Length: 71
Length: 182
Image (cartoon, rainbow over all chains, first blue to last red; front, top):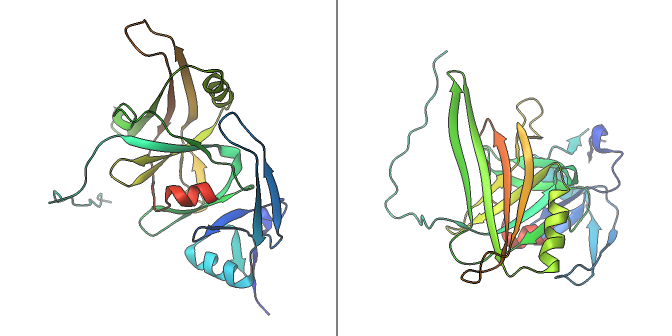
């Protein structure tokens, strides 16, 4: 059954982070926990990025995201 | 084949306040793909991770700007020399470190938020081959100046993000809040 997936040329990436509204999602479908180190004018942050669902991929594909195909 | 021209009619009441108020900058290598709408505006970035856009808020004194100055070296060639200027008063180790980090990069992309509310992306353009993005003719690089000036003036850091492109810098529909969340 066809479904939305990552194009072959992007499939070797460790993360593909984009936005749905104001929320970051990982197109690879895996939840990410990223620690952004502290800098002079910024405290360290830990960000959680949720994995994208099929519905997310469908939405982004229809927006024209070049990383996603339907097959 | 004849050129297809696009008309412009003077706007009655458009906010045309000049200058830029904040920018986000990243290394080109952090961008995996760019989504464009039918009007060639950027509607999304896909990044190699999260938190890769670095935020710069410069002095609010009407000195910051982003200019794309066109020239035509030959009849078939038109280019834009693009330059974003940002000033940060008060020299400090933090600003020197920021300057050093930026000047070590060989390919930068900047998103500049204009005082009129729109945003322009410097350093990339739409690829006519793939529909994805490509870097511009001369990739974005940053020149930093760290100036004490004289006692009559302010000490300051000045950054110039410079690139050259055969096409205008794309506008983006993304907001500052969205870029910060990406």
